[in-house]
Length: 347
Ligand code: IPM
Ligand code: MN
Image (tube, rainbow, N blue to C red):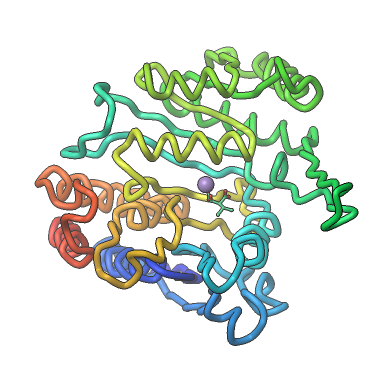
């Protein structure tokens, strides 16, 4: 029987609640699909930091490298560990070390979910550059604490990084409805963003079947609200993609529905699957977190592993559940109720 080794990092807060739910669903999907998912749990989290002084051990990245994929819940517990420490100690090093340069986030309304917009028929795939750009971490602070203090944070755009994410965007558009929206702010940022637009234009010659349009980030934010049905694949830098995907989550009914896949397209290292939402300390362990974003992320993982049928079955089970009105309104249904409904739709 085919077997996949999965590293489970539930992390903090509701990350633990939703990872458990997702894992239950994935196990049932695996059984039905005649393959095996072997999970290894890593307790790396802010609690782990409080105990050991580190979010993960020094050889954490090497420990993860041998897995076929990583399923992550959420990272962050700001009451105990500053976000700038916890994220740079776990989530961000995994994305960068494993060259998970394409962060794919689907935004569409599940059946039965009422978003805040009048438009109900949109199906957007947002692709966020995930390893460089504005989140490179290049910079520093000098004269700290004085009136002369200076903070510099430099965005890094390399030809390698920009080309590969745009190419990935073109490929995704080609496999979908053939439309690519490339997002920059090249009217105000005249170096990096003009460079991004140039590379978009250069690559477009190799994809004559893809209709590519460059948008400015501010105009794209408005378009996602006013005319989301006009969009297919969006490709954007790390910061812009980060912001647009929270907007995408909002128009699809909330963060409880927003799934994400941190993909290493070359498969030279594991990819990582996680809901877009955070650890939500205010509702942690109350049993009210919506597990759909995590379960959908699990479906993206199955798809990436090549288990396309199982992935489709999990998506169908999620859709059958929301079509019955279960899990469609924030806070109404309990995590276990939603999970049980998805499990029964699967069997
Ligand atoms: C996300 C999150 C993270 C990011 C934070 C927690 C660093 O907001 O996955 O969108 O922006 O990468
Ligand atoms: Mn974000």
